Image 1 (tube, rainbow, N blue to C red):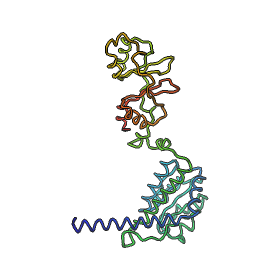
Image 2: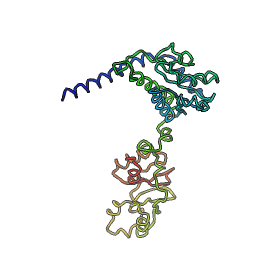
Image 3: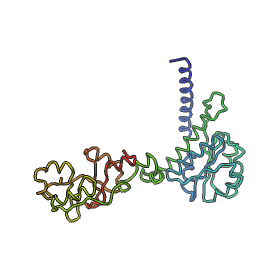
Length: 317
């Protein structure tokens, strides 16, 4: 390891240590004001308008995105754009969450004044309790005194980390209060790996099913099996799924196969899944049973078929 590498690692560990210590201070400094902020947001009929300038603005965008994706309608409004018409986005039904390390950012003045003029609830996050922002706010969330990790005290590092963590804390507190579930989360995350993991069986299943009655001759059942192309048959009795026929069942009854009925060849009591189950659960069942397809049933009646290949294509497995 070179001396330069050692220096880089030492710097990284120092920065992370400083910010970790600041987060510990932040957690200890939280008081009833945090609960007041949560209640204020819960009471709003509109959205959370999140705003900040510079680095605080970047953090504000992330907080707004986190709130919106976890069940709390939110929107970022740029304070400079707000002064040129975007204040019209901020209504009396909203609540404003405004970020500024100093609490004196001049670009925030019009937005803060707008909230006061129209009695829009204002939550301020800043490091100075006597700042203009926190004195005007209905709820003031004060960042504890902590050194910036840059060493010069001028680069927003520790302060933005604390603000981001405080935003996450608000989002999670709101999410838990609303009993926000992974199923709710999927509504806002239909794309990508996360959306795939939260897909339901009903999203991926086939509804043109390879079904045959329990007394059908295998000579006819084989035509259905090859025609549907799933490599599997569901066997029904009075519309209920009572068995399944796979390639393994065919091999076990190869001698005299065409003299049998489906009921004589099938495997009884096949493993099934419901339409509401997560596709990830279907994958786990198929992998555990070393099978490639599952019939989807409601009240013992087959309504779909899901294959491992469907899940792989969708990115579930």
